[in-house]
Image (cartoon, rainbow, N blue to C red):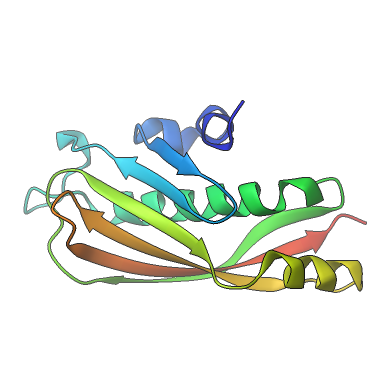
Length: 145
């Protein structure tokens, strides 16, 4: 089962929004929100909350892809998030997430008994390529023991 399939199966909100996990690697996660009238805002584009969930889902996908081998000893948790809505989003939108720190550095902190934090940067784009939003989520790996 791929990371995207696992998230779609275990995260009810991802299923509710019909998110499509296009690509999920330790280097990049791409998630698409189809154009769905049930999730439109007052101007006919995707609701801000739906775009937040899209971006957060892309960040979660890359975190699991990058640190899935650490799950026996740590739980990934979002610490804080900031989103900026840059342009009007209309139609289908896609979120692309990238890690803001090298995986090895985060794992080294975990190995040292620390609770590492690391940013995930997400760009939200319309089908024409225009960036409609940018989000940063700071994640942590909380040691299990």
